[in-house]
Image 1 (spheres, rainbow, N blue to C red):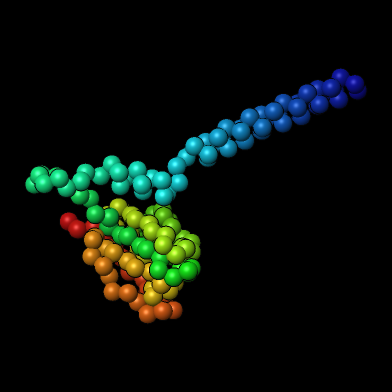
Image 2: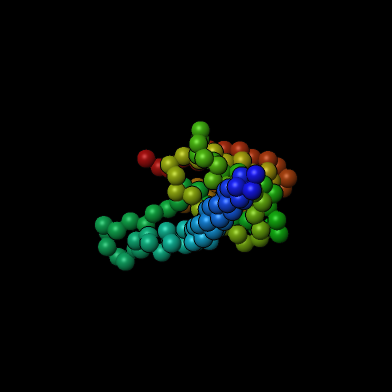
Length: 139
């Protein structure tokens, strides 16, 4: 009986140590993963700039959304038939850009955001009006 209890206690300690190890690794990985804003900043700084040569190109995002109100109700952006890239409220001055070839967009209040599609500003909706559309990259 004493040996069985000892084996069970050793097994429990092993499980706890394993879970702590896995949890610690996951925590460290999440802390070192860049946020979407950091990835966008990195992407923007990595983009070529126009320095006067005709061969250089500036990449324009397929979709750029800027929040104009104190709080912009839910803004949803997803790849058709795929990943949801954003589904949340935005704060005043917050901006997001997406470079995917095709995006489905749903704005809970289209009057609170400024939307630019392929470098061209879309007509702003009325306050409180829900708006849904598909943004496609040129080409």
